[in-house]
Image 1: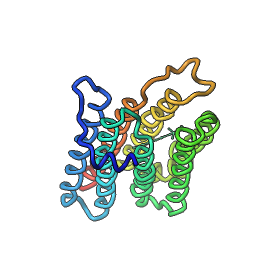
Image 2: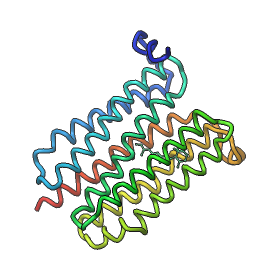
Image 3: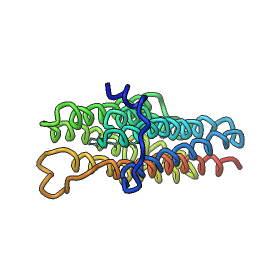
Image 4: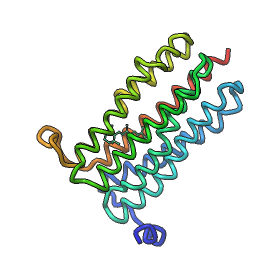
Length: 239
Ligand SMILES: *C/C=C(C)/C=C/C=C(C)/C=C/C1=C(C)CCCC1(C)C
């Protein structure tokens, strides 16, 4: 029903609606970044093209979701949780694919790829259950999601992926390290947003409030920033 109303409504953005504004800016930033990545493709060696293409796909998928999320927010003044998670479940596994793609040169095997994809999907599906389905037990679902998140962090900082990056050295190692910081710091904004929007043991010290601004800022930093690190790696590895 709501999705039908979205299609039919001509939603308007109020000038005082700063949350809606961040959806709008998010949409534009993701579109601009996608154009940038796609149009740069030809300047790269074949072996880097796939990585840059995936960077563009990540921001493009996000741009489309931001278009809908902006509309949803403007129409209902409610968090577009469903669109948010559909976006994440498509883009986060692609970010995991990026780790694999840049480490392939150093001999990364597809089992690393699948491990990262499965972990990210477990993280997001359990997060969605806690945020939208069984809100009463948000803390437990968040915990399961958090374990999957830390597993990913472990994998890239200390596990197989980090060993491959060390073997590769040079530009690949430096890019890998920056991406590791994105996952540890940039991605940590999401569980904080989750705790702001759900109830659990953490409510005593984490303020509750609208979580969309936090998610929107995090998405812009993580998706565009991540893509630029890959872009930079591809440019440097040209010569
Ligand atoms: C572009 C979108 C990105 C990088 C989204 C990342 C999302 C997360 C790292 C979400 C993590 C969560 C937890 C670790 C626990 C609580 C539930 C989530 C799904 C918000």
